[in-house]
Amino acid sequence: MDISPEPGWDRLIRFLRVEQGIVMLLGETDSGKTTLARYIVESLIERHLPVALIDSDIGQSAIGLPGTISVKIFRHHKDLEDFGCERMTFLGFTNPATVTPLMVDMTRYMTLIGRRRAGVGVVDTTGLVTGKLGKVLKIAKIRAIRPKHVVAIQKENELEEILSLIREAKIHRLRVSSVAKRRSAAARRAYRKRKLQDYFKTGSQCERIFDSKDVQFLYRGRPFFLGEKEMPDGAIIGLNHDNNTLALGVIKGIEGRSVLLQAPLRSLRGINRVVSGDMTMA
Image (cartoon, rainbow, N blue to C red; front, side):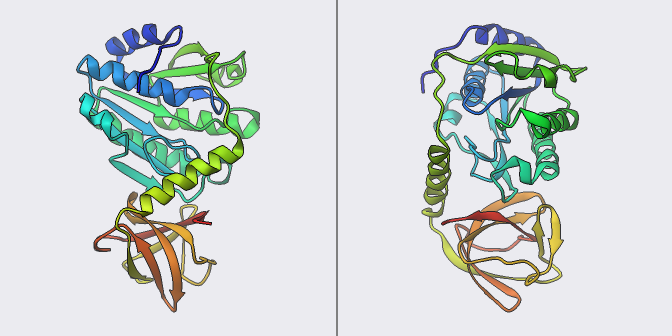
C-alpha cells in the first residue's frame, strides 16, 4: 500500500525518530488517523526502529477485529504483509460510548505491552472527539497511557478544547487531508461484518464451555453467572486467558450451565474468562 504523505507528516517522522515514545492520534471519524498510523510504522521501520501499533478503534479496527483493542510490533517490512494483530482483548461493543471505563483500562493495558517492546508506540483511537463524552473519553485515555506526543488531525479547530487540557505531552497539529473520504454508517457496518465473517471462516469448530469456578463470565468488565443475562444464539463472545483474548466465538446454544459455541480454536484449555457484549453475527 503506497501512501502519499500529507503536509507535516515527514516533519513528524523526523521528530519521532529522535524523540520516540508513545504517540496518540486524535481526529474525527474518517480524518485519516489509520493512514497516518500506517505511514508512521512504515517510515520508522525503514529506519530500523521497531514500532508498536495499538489499535483502540473498536468500531473500525485496522489490525484487530471489531469490538477489540489490539497490538502488533512491527520490526521489518515483511511484518506489513500481514497487517493483523499479535494480541487482542475483546470488549464486546463497537460503540465507545457504551463501554468507556473498560475501553480506557484496556487501551492502557495494550499500550503497556507495546511500550515494553518498541521504541515508538502509536495509539490509534476512535473518532469520538466532540461533545462531553468525546472530551471525557479522550482525556481519560491520555491520562491513562501518558503519551509523549499527541497528534491532532483537524479540519478546523474541533480538537482544541481537548488539546487545551493536555499539560505534559508534545502536541503536533496536522490538517485533515483534502482527499480524505467519508464512509457512511452502512459502509462501516459492512466493514465490521466482513472482518468477522472472514475471521470465522478459518477453521472454526464446535466446543462447549462450562460455567464453573475456573471460568468467569464478564459483561462490561463485571462478572455475572450464566443465566443472569441473555446470551442469544449468534452472539459473539471473547474467549480469554485473563485480559488476553485468545479467540472470538459465536454462541450456538445455552444448555444448563454450559455454552455451546463455535470458535477457531483447537482447544479451550487455558480459557478462564468469557467476555460478553452486544455484538452478534446477524
